Image (cartoon, rainbow, N blue to C red; front, side):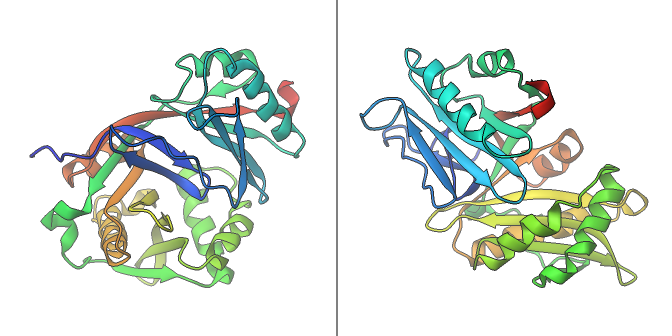
Length: 277
């Protein structure tokens, strides 16, 4: 496989959605856009020197961008955590290998945050879309547009992950009401939902981030995950996007690499629960 020359692996995330924006090495770090959240600055200068905070009213409060100066990191981190604790529920702080300060993870652990296993962030350059993803999907793929049908997504996710997804309809209903923001695709077998994946499309950006790709255990190995992947990257091209980043769990890493995705960075989600305080 030939190496795709992305502009850089220096990334920043935005509060418009969970996207990693690839910036050129010479470009300034751009502040997160914040219609859904707030931006904290640890001084009065231009970036770097910010944390971004996304308050998800559907039940999860999280931060997904951090570029702080070491001398002011402690006070700014505490300010943001205090703001998050005002809201009910857990806090998620999504860190990336390129975040600053470099010891951000240790600082969060000292405050009671627990890390998960860090997945790789992979990305596909749609200007060099491989033939395996350029052909029409072979499976029965349908886009979900009616929030009343989100129970189908819940049914697949709960069978795959053996956990509660009752939060999903409320949060995804909000996403579906934002024009051009969230696209959900289901693969059907014998008229029943068998696999699901969705895309967050970043307005005014070259990015559309891919999420999930969950397939019922009994129906794996017949191409459903690849079919949903192909449907989503082709849709991203139609929207004029160039890059499709994805947080790749071990189970999907091999599939994504086979279809041309390449590593950009790693990401770790730190979670704080109220009872841990």
